Image: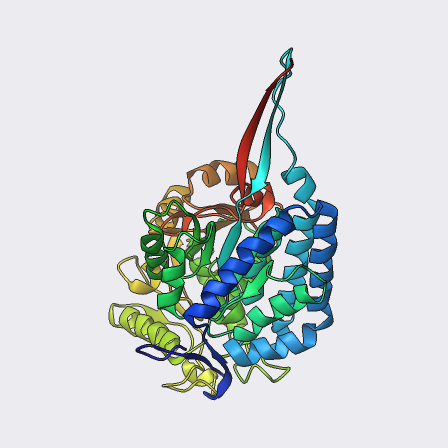
Length: 467
């Protein structure tokens, strides 16, 4: 965490034991200026590099991450608390997304040619924007960053990455991965920055696009910093993602998947399940089965192989979830899990017992404000209309999942759901072939798929008349 005042260093305070795991010097104004100048000059050279060569370099970088998967998994466990048993999976996800974006680059960046017109050659060409500024979060530091870094580079842009102060080693791995490929100096750089310097850079007009993943308040500051500069901004600001279990759902699959969707990464996922609506005929049975599965988690140090639930990232995050749970209980909610079932959960630490709440309503913070922790509320509903109304009752709109055997009905209900992705019988997943976007306070912009390339390029029309 950055120190108050005018910080010169960042410290990663490990949620594992509260120790300082990593300390790095923040970039000073001279370094920042030099990095931006180098990035802009390097981009001109990189733009002339063939797509095949860009693909070779990006693939080599992916292989670097795969070779260091075990090391990276341990570092992630120390930096943000994800169990080592799962932390390596982030490298697998990085590889899947990167390779899809590499393979689809040529088609995504191809000229758009309208119907032929006699005597004219007309087409639209996609050209790089220039320098892309990626501001990555701590919860999935590789997966979120790769969403913009690889397509930005494949499109011919240069990249400056600002990793979260909680996971500085992940930022360094990106630059090390690409430096090992022989990429021209300055095409991709990692900068450790204070919040003030980050906002100053955005407002400087020296960068050409900003990709940000984080909280709604932080996204608002990004927009304010960019105001009047005409620099493009992509914002992915989290969610309060709902699930609806219909009467015809595959019961066992829905329970298992929705437990994982709510508690994977200790609930610290922007597209994790935070509220569940269950048809009233299944409600009691669902809650009973759901709670029993949650009780199977092992809350302990993320460095132990048997651990399936690690600490949340910091004490303030744990305190927020405790506050939400306590307020809900005071307002009439019923907790389904006795915290003593998880003996490693202690007050005033990052080790937080998972909780399932029933008898909840939308007047409670736990059902209306993002929790970003190991808690979920479950409500009964009588029909589809009630479920859709409750699912849309949020100022966030990232994903929503429907658990049913009826695909045609899912499409009909999905048209009415206010979100960026509609899932059927799955959740908490990004398909790199599909656009990743949101509505309402979740933000704006598009990552992954061909549309992810669109926001990282500038279109230019060529209207050539034959002499």
